[in-house]
Every structure is written in structure tokens, then in C-alpha cells.
Image 1 (cartoon, helix red, strand yellow):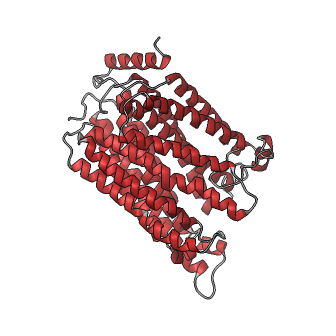
Image 2 (tube, one colour):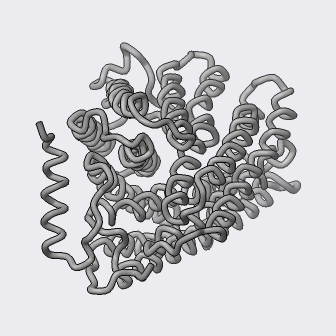
Image 3 (cartoon, helix red, strand yellow):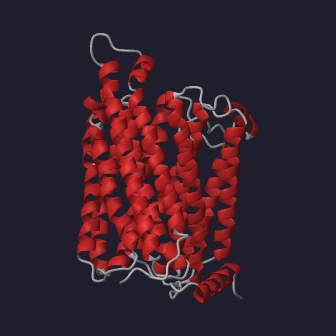
Length: 484
């Protein structure tokens, strides 16, 4: 019996073929089409994240902007939670597209994938509405936080019931992909992807452990936050980037897999013990200042290797893929991940330096460029490559790709500017608040660096325009396809 997803994919493909002169490509496996709603939801939530980021940016300089409708703490919570959720949607979409092709078989259950999508989307939407509609303490009472307290921690503010829902969604997702892999071909890319996805789910379980002791709380809190973004997420990123590079360059899979092995090995060696750079000032044993500094100093290496990996593979390409925009996103991922996660992370990771910079805008500068370069860009790389294929074409038209490449440069340059402005604000913050004989109070210092916050806000508007162009590029038709 033909599943609704397969039928929809076949119908959409046939319709496109009849009406679009660019349409001449079929998906290799029809159930890969279930990735499309995940990618659409990811980009929609990305837009929401940036909108709330712009609201926060204004609240930095206009303190009562939208108060009391959207207080700063709520805007920040929505901004960061949308970041996490849209990236998870992107990873899930990538998994549903990548795994069937790597396994050389249809997805185990496309119906389960669609059901998982709607459960995750509705749960996420209701959680965001809860943040905005009722006070956080009230939301905790309404959702049974007293029975199993898990709320109130940065990035893990989700109600307990939402966390349980995330676990169920993850189990459904991993069951679907694992069954697909077990019944099909096993490749290095699919194995690394699955290792990263299973690690993501396992480390999220520590969000349910909420010890009364604050030191223990922060200690294990980082087992979710750090071991996600500086551990298993990097495996997912590496697998996604390797998959796209295999497709757009024609380079032998063995070469790309060797690079992937080295990158993930360095990621795990440096990232796991590198968790210690978060233990400097929380009351953990002092030896973490040494171990955390040493291994954190190694963390830029896998990102640098990833940059070399991407450029080396593209330089050795055996074909000129018509989707030049996807190639640009792939190269940009390596460079921006190295700069944001590697260079800006190293700038303040050594304990003697972090003693002065901890919790300043330098941290925010690192966080913004790292998340954009390492994870937002790799998801957009995957979308840029796969979305045309799911719409029946190998690549979008030249006109559409030109707009998409403009969006790449606008967003990337805007993020570089945001990072530089926040870095400048952070350096001044350290100097005025934490050095000298007469340090300023926090609010007095904030007033003196407001100029950089205005520049950051302007750069954020530029980023938003770039994101709108990225979305618009998928709606631009043309009679001429990018030449191979």
C-alpha cells in the first residue's frame, strides 16, 4: 500500500514536472520528502528567533520597550528556546533526508515521521505561547513542575511536560532512523550522524536531574548544554557537511570519510574534557582550571580541520554542481564555525583570561557567531542542497541562487559585525567594571557602551533582511537553470 507521504511526494513531483521547466529530477527515495515540513518549520522558527532577538536588542537601549507585555527575561527565554527548537527541527529534517539515501532504502515509517513532526511542532508552539501568556512561575505550577522540578535553568526553561514530550519525540525519531539504518547500508556518514543524534537524546536526559546543591546543578547542567553544542552536535554537523560535500563535489567518499574520522576524533578528545572550562568559577575542584584551559585550547583544532576539509574537498571536486549556493553555504560553514566557535571561543577560554571576561558581552559575541557558523549555517547548507531536490529540480534557477547568495553574504557579514560590536562592548565592559581602582557599577557601565548596542541592533536588522532574502529565493522561478 502506498503511504500518504509517498503519494503526496509523487503527486507534487508530477505536478511540478508539468509546470516548471526546471523540473527534471526525482528524489532517489520518495520518503525523503518527509524532511520538507521539518525544514519549513525550522526556517519559520528561525524567523521568530530573530524577531525576538531584535526585540531584546532594543530593550538593551530602551529598557521599557514592549514592557510589560514582553519583559526582557521572557524575550530572552523565547529567543534562546526558539534557537534550540529550530535547530532540532533542522537536524531532524536532515536525518530524514540523509539517512534513507545513505542506507539505500526508504525510511522505515514515513507516517511516524509526520506524526512526530506535528507532535513536536504543537508542543513547541504551546510552550512558546505559555512563556508569553502567563508568568513563568504560574506556568511552572500549571505544568506540574512541583512533581518533578526541572524548570528555571537557562536554556532548559521548558516545562517538565514539554521535556517529556521532547524525549518521546526523540525516541520516535531515533527509532525510525535506527530501523532504517539497521535494514540498509551502513556508511561512515550515517554512523556518525546516528552517534550524534543518539548522544543528543541521551545527554538531554540530564535536564531532568535538578539537584538542590547549586554546584552540582551547574556541574550537570553543562552535561546537556556543553556536551550538546561542543560535543555531539559537532558530530551531526560533520556528518551533514560531509554528506553535502559528497553530493556536490563528486570526490571519492573514502577521502571525505577519512577527513570526517579525524574531525570527530579531535572533537571528542577536546570537547569532552573541555567541559571543564565551565567549571572554573562554580565551586568545582581547582584542577578544572588547568584541565579545562588545556583541552579548551584544543577545541579550535577540529573547527580548523573542518575548514581545511571543506576547502580541500571542493578544490578536488570532480564536477561543477549546478547548486552553487549550497557549495557556498558549505564553505561558509567551515570558515564561520572556525571563527565563532574556535577563535572567539579560544579568546576567553583560558582561566586567567576568563576570570575577567566571564559573563561579559565577549561571551555573547562568541555565542552568536558560534551558533550561526557551526549550526545555523550547516542546517541552511542542508536545506539549500535538498530543498530543490524535494521540489523536483537539481538546483534552483540562476536568479534564485543569486538572491540566495546575497542572503548568505548579508547574514554572514551582519553576524561578523554583531560579533565585533559585542566584542568591543565586552572589552570596554571588562576595563570599566573589572579593572582599575574605581570600577563602575554594572548599569553605569552599560550606559557607556550603549553605542555598540545600537550598532548591534542595526546589524541585526541587516541579518533579518538577509534571512528574508533566503526565504524569498525559494519562491523565485526562472527559465534558466544554473549550468553544470
